[in-house]
Image (cartoon, rainbow, N blue to C red; front, side, top):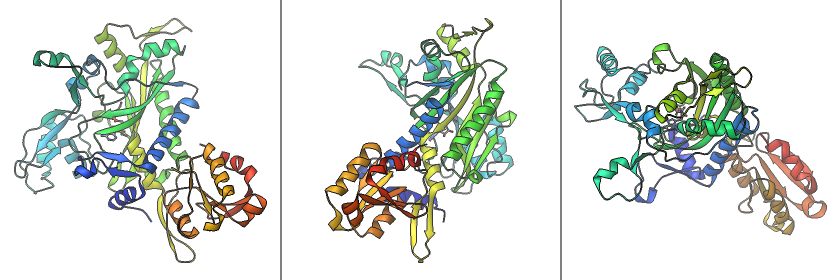
Length: 462
Ligand code: GAP
C-alpha cells in the first residue's frame, strides 16, 4: 500500500525522520529538522552519491567550497540580475502565486511557463481563464520579479554607506563554487579535460511558494556535478550522465515505472543551454522534478572569465588547441531524493497470518540502522549479547533493543527499514550462534558470531 503526503509527514515525525523546525516556538514556515533516523538516511544518500560520482567514477574529483562568496560571483553568474520568480497576487483575496506555477498546475504540467516573458505568462493566464485557486476570481496584479537570493551583510556594519559594499548572499546553488575553482582544481589534480568536479552542500532560496513538505524548501542541500568537456562532445556526455543518473536511482531501488525523463522543449531552454532533461518522480501530486541535467555550453566559465578578468580557458596537451570547456551539469537535491526514497520504499503489507506490517524496503546501504541486536527474551540480555552488539557496531550502524516482545521489536525495525535483526538466544550462549532475520523475506538463518561481520559485508554495501 502506498502512503500519501499527510501520512508520510506523520510517519516521519513519529519515527524520528523529520520534525518541524523550531516547533516549540510554533515553527518557522517550511523549515524542517532531521531527527536521529533522518540524519542517518540523509548522510547515507550523500555517501551513496559520493561513492558513485566521485569514488567510482574515473573522471571526477570532489570539492567543498564556501557558502559565502564574493558578490561579484553572483553578478557574473546572472543570479543578481536574473534569478527571480514571476510573482503575482490575487487582488481579491491577496493570495500570492508564482505565475508559472499557476500555469503548470492548471495544465497538469503540459506547460511549465519556465523562462516565459511576463507578457506571455499574463496572456496565457487570462486567455485560459486561470482563476485564483483560492477565491475563484480572475483579478491579478501585474507580475513582479522577485529575486530568490537571501541577502545579508558581512562584518561589523555601523554606517549604511558601507552596508551595500559588505553585502553577501547565501549561495542559491553550489555550482558557482565549482566554476570559480575550475582552474585550481584542474591544475592541482592534474586532470585533463574531460573531467568533473562534484560538490555536496547547503543552498538557500527565498522561494515564493515553498511546500509539499521537504520537496520545495528555502534551505536545502544539493549534490552537483559540473562536468567539463571539449566543445562538440557535450551532447555525448549529456547522454552519458543522463544514463548514469538514472542507473544510480535504479540501483538505489527507486521503481523505474515511477521515473520519467522530461526533455525541455526549445522555448523552455535557458538561452545558453543546448539540452536539458529533468528526471521526474511520480510524487503523490503527480510527476515532479527530482534531478535536473543540463548541457550549459561554455556559458558559466565565459561569464566568470569576462567578469573576473582571469583566463579560464584550457590548453589541450594532445593537440595544443585552446578552448573554454563546455559543461554538463547533473544537479539533484538531497531532500528531494530523501522524499523519493521514502515514497518508493514505504509499504503496508498484510502477512499470511492476517497481521499488517509497516515496512520500509530501503536499499540496505541507505537504511538508518543496518542491524538490530535483540536478546530473544530479557534473560538473554548478557555479556555475550553486548559482545555481539559491540562487534557489529564497530563496522555498521547497529541498535541494541531488549524492550517489548520480539514480535513488536521486529515490527519496529521493519517500519524504519532495518534490513537485518540478529537474535541472541540459547544457541548463542551455548554455541556462539545467532539467528539473522531478513527484513524483506522475513527468513531466518543461523550464523556463527565469528562469521557475522563478513556475512553482512556484501549485503550492506553499495
Ligand atoms: N545548479 C543548477 C541548479 O541549481 P536547479 O534546477 O535550480 O538547478 C537543481 O536545482 C536541483 O536542486 C533540483 O532538481 C532539485 O532537486 C533541487 N532543488 C532546487 N530548488 C529546491 C528547493 N527549493 N528545495 C529543495 N530542493 C531544491
